[in-house]
Length: 398
Image (cartoon, rainbow, N blue to C red; front, side, top):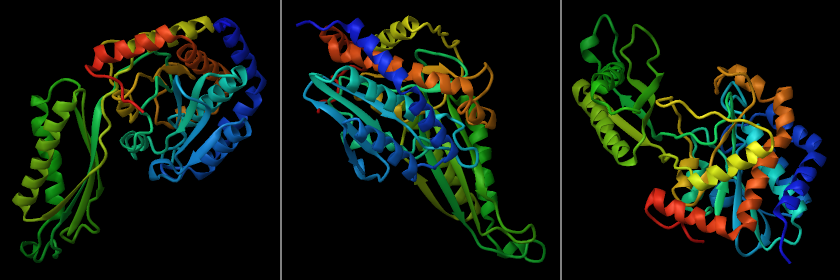
């Protein structure tokens, strides 16, 4: 017997609206209890508990991370993954709205399970910690967590609604210089100034900016610059991000950055330690999956904008997922234009009345798109074909 996808979508919407108050409660609970990357214990327990109550089998501690999980309902193919994030930022909490990302993913997964109890296929809600610098999805991708998905879906809040928006690949670096202390006035010649070394790094980066390709960003902060003005600093450190819109060029930039750091150490006589973090690859959203999501968004009565050419973009570890399987990462407007992410104003927006209203709509958009993937074989074939065209290879197999 054929399945009427429109009836399924109506049932999904009904199921989401039935649990709207619970979705609001989850979002507000996470917002009121912000947790940093790899320490999202309350959020992970909240989300996994909710999924278990609705018939999902939950595997915790996935890929060696205590707060990562995969919740599964059904078996066999096709397989759709809905990704939850739930980490916060230092001092300003959920100023990137990950409380909503986690809520939307759980709402979509549970609504699909309720609307499709006899599903032929598999729904996976994938809990991914530490997007804000820790690279949870990079670790999960390396562990094969996303392999075999017909599609990976997630949605991010912001001040505009976009179906698609690029991202920059990024590599984080921690740099430490070790010098020799001395009295800065009576015997500076006896010291080795580690602050001179870290300042030289920033000066050398600035000297290279004219030669950077467009959409290149190298930026950072000095995290330790010394202890007293009258003491030659024996230890300094900096946190620096190197970004580019092309993976090969990023690797070239990373090499130049290491040369800059080593040259600064040589010039000042310091010892140096360079710690390289996990690279977030550039995001390549599947254009057919983007189109499908757009149809569902407009069917729900929402409009969207197209990002202006040359608009600035950030980075996200969803990029590593998009390099493996057909992926989308749309944005849903939760506040007025101009309220930027990673600000106190956006933290307030992510717990606002509008955000509460969108707890249901966001879940429906994702669930409808997941239902399209699960129920339409021709769409799955188009997703694979589009992935091949965009990335020049087959999606990663399970």
